Length: 322
Image 1: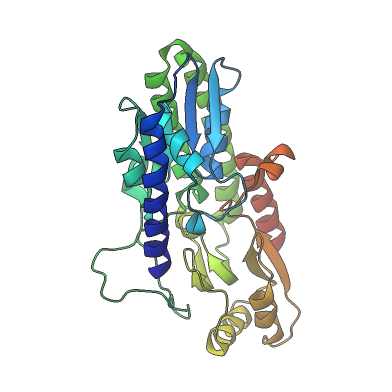
Image 2: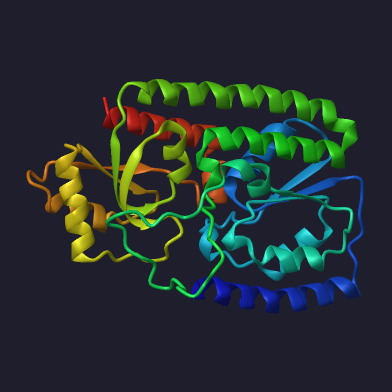
């Protein structure tokens, strides 16, 4: 938890300077509805809902490709949030800095959408599963549970989040509410269709996923009743696994006749490769699943979308378990 405490302290310093300058020179509002989103999934969902509606400006805070867990807002980010009309964020441990941002916001009529609140019935605690490395910065004295932030990797959760964002936009911008509702309904249908495809893929066979990496896909496996083993939890900052963890995962790969060892986007695949080298026949391949924790503006310019990435994940899993 040390890294999160450090990030919070750094953010507090930014808030002090950012809001001091805001107070000195309040931003002038116009008829544009300004929407600020933190992670890529909520940014793309908002874009899909807004569609061709006029007078909407959508900002994406993590456009540099920064990881959710390491993100620290800049003074400019704080000013954007302070004056925006709609703010959409995940609401997990990595978003502790948001409390101060909202408390000091100039626009007291801002519509705030906490996506973990929108899916509160489905939120689960972070899991330390058998064979998984315990976080090196874990605070054993901490009493409150830490909840898994990666809610967007469940298509079921995605549908609820889209509804919450659509409702928030309608409240903030009634004149475009018909557009938001229509676009939301069409997008929900696409999410449902992809969800059915995943259910069909996993209805008869329930493969076990072996991850030589972090595991942010807990909500995904909950949706389709899949089991998994991984080197680290989804929010772990660790990148080096012990020999015991590698051997454990290799043995699980042998036990379940795994053809693929999985890793997430931007991984150097060192651990996944080490797992393969310690299996019985060393014939497995590495497959990459995209958790959308660090999508950049360049990827968006190149056409990346939430549905497109989830469909690519489907293709990877279909190939892995055919």
